[in-house]
Length: 330
Image: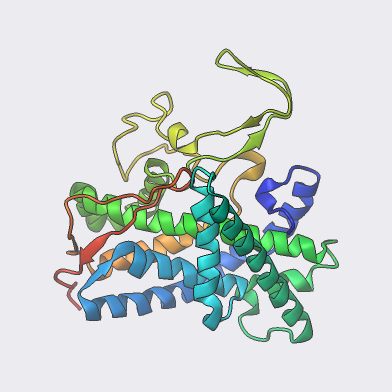
């Protein structure tokens, strides 16, 4: 199984990232907007019919699952199994990684994802997609493969990495944003009164509850950080969630403030490895949470607090029990 984009360094990373950004661009984000809106509308209709729902399980998760499946081209009948593969990988990565059976399950899931994506690539070559080509990555990647000098292994590693990086983390962003707005009613009232704060609220959620707690990097040269020597080749784990609460950078770092400016958080990383899927995550949060608040401005949290999923890697709520409350006036 080839390595994902996030595990590569230049010059391999440079070539792969150029290929990825050639298809994950502003045009894709603009074109995908109506599809995301349609997914959200269906979810909200189902929620309204039920009256109560889980903000993560019934909204954030199916929104990101449907969007990512659409982008990658996962068949509808395969989505549940594909999602389980992704979650299996993250369960192991977020554990203490001492369970041999869990490690084996993670490996099987990772290989299964790669095999599935490889099959989608081969199917695209045999029977090129005629629908949704502008919003599905595989047709665009396959059609430009020769021009960009990429192998099938390159494509598989790129696509699996995109799924890993964009599925669980975006679910975390959306469910955390819903949770924070429910736990901070004054901020929710502020956003309802001034919807122009929506983008700022997304950025503050990314800072306050950073989905990916840390990353792994390798020092490219000898250096000293805060008096601690680091040798070239040492593996480092920058803790993004701590950086986003740095009192030297943020005033009142432990306060959730949807109007915070400036907000130079590093939730999407920084530099060479800045997340290429950031626009897609922001798009889903903007359309999803914006529509949810507009449709159910009086929804209530059916718990005094929420529990968080045990994971060293991800910051993600376990559940967000909600009732829709009084609907907006038509």
